[in-house]
Image 1 (tube, rainbow, N blue to C red):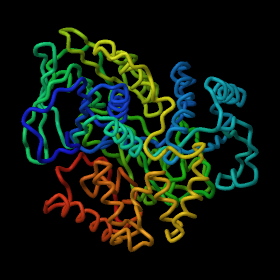
Image 2 (spheres, rainbow, N blue to C red):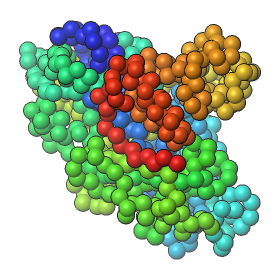
Image 3 (tube, helix red, strand yellow):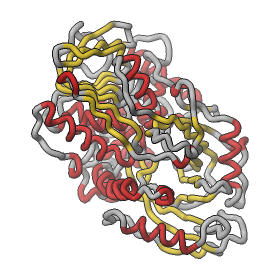
Length: 528
């Protein structure tokens, strides 16, 4: 079956065991797990993979230190264990990150912070990440960017991730294990009929309607999960989501070094300041209850001011809204436990709602966080498998994602070997290709013996060879797909280069405009 919403699909598609609706991290993870257990799978996504919440995270694989204050010990333990699993699976896009936590005695006493970090060190397995420690911030590189008078703090470890690439790699692995992946394909409606789901899919590229029968259906549509249950499936559910908007800003780099900061705001929330894309700092996030269309989420002036104020309390160089070069917002579909607490206090745990009546199971995913997606997928397929006659057990814990199959999961060693193998690659380009594609960078370079062998350079080191790979292998079909989700090159390239990338996809798609059935745009960028 073709992998993009394109020509050649029959009016009635071949039946499948599992139809997964939603191409975010949970849908892609479930499709991958199910395909690896031998189930036939079709994944459909109305926009681009990771086009919504899954590309709008804080880019962290972390246990969630602050969740300890809400006694979410099971969630924190599971997330801490997943850090090491995912770090081994995708060392090219997931890397260790050391965090500095300056201490404010008026907020939380030092003994309480030390206790929290002790639990954080010991709740989950920790093999590759160093533990926490106290830090003297009166001198040296850790304290240098902070305001005078900040004397002490703590350091601990978590991981950084290219969130949207994590989604793409899961979808790619699912396809290579037999799944079909249809982007720009919207579920119009589905109904139970004769013990199966009969689903009607709209191909947004040409408006054509296709029908597929599936023995089970997974609703992994994130912020739209409730709406899909009610309006597309005509079902009722006792479960609900609480929509919470999280916004981030990107500013010119605030500090040297590869460590990050986690600072406490005067409302007791925490804000991260993370090295980003070499010459920037990523600051986030907010927690604001949200109503309306999740696709229309955008940062407000109040959120921008909040983030600037939060980090300016700690850094010697204040951050102002005028410093912001890019911002993005996403809507988190948090499971609504009807606690009526603040948005920041709502659980980040997930709930799987399984309705197996009529012999055609429906599993809807409520809540979750990017760190625990693999476990969520494992549990989801574990619950559906017996209903579909699948006896295969879990397998993803020890399986690398595409590009992650490098010796010892040692990215630094791999990157050095890649530079030695292709010495004609400019070092910055070599590092970027290694850090984006891992061992799959070989598929981009092919037999090229020099830069000329990669085709035309459209600007900033983006070559035709890389764009062909993104289109042929990674489901990209627009400039936005490549510039903001397959990469973050939209931050680095000038308007001319961004336009050249968009034009390349338009020529490939035979369209006059930049987009081929444009996905929901969740970013606001400004030319620099």
